[in-house]
Length: 196
Image 1 (tube, one colour):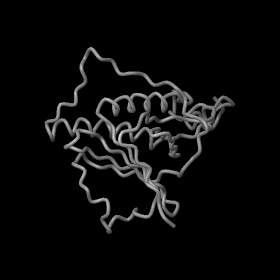
Image 2 (cartoon, one colour; image 1 turned 60 degrees about the horizontal axis):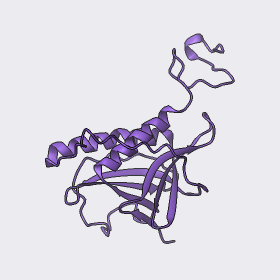
Image 3 (cartoon, one colour; image 1 turned 90 degrees about the vertical axis):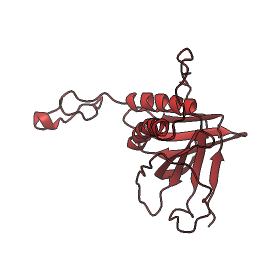
Image 4 (cartoon, helix red, strand yellow; image 1 turned 60 degrees about the vertical axis):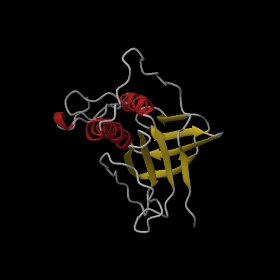
């Protein structure tokens, strides 16, 4: 079976979003460009970790490569609060997330690779130049579908900002144990299993 590479270099829009009520939300990455929309499903922790690692990647790229990635102070980040584009058809479930910084074009490359054989892992990559070795035969995920986007540093910061808002918009945490509060009640381990 052949694999598909959904490449958006750059996308018109690339966002993290959810479908469903808090406590039952499904998380997606969605890219739009060239008259097509691609949505891939992933876990909340993957969205949170992706935002965190993208921040680290931008900081490391500025330090290591000396590229000026700072935004002008008078130009605020635009706020994309629009919902995901409908219909949200899941292309695949993300197993691995890869990040890189392309020094030549000063862009961030994000690659979401489909889960293979039921395994879900998040791959943390350091900031480094992207090389044209995608046809390398020793890549273990060559036969898996993938979504690849290339973003400017500003678009990356906008993605990070929205991803953090999406993750924080869920159920509030219990002040005692930190687990999400359920509207029907919460069995708090700090209260010996009594409803809170």
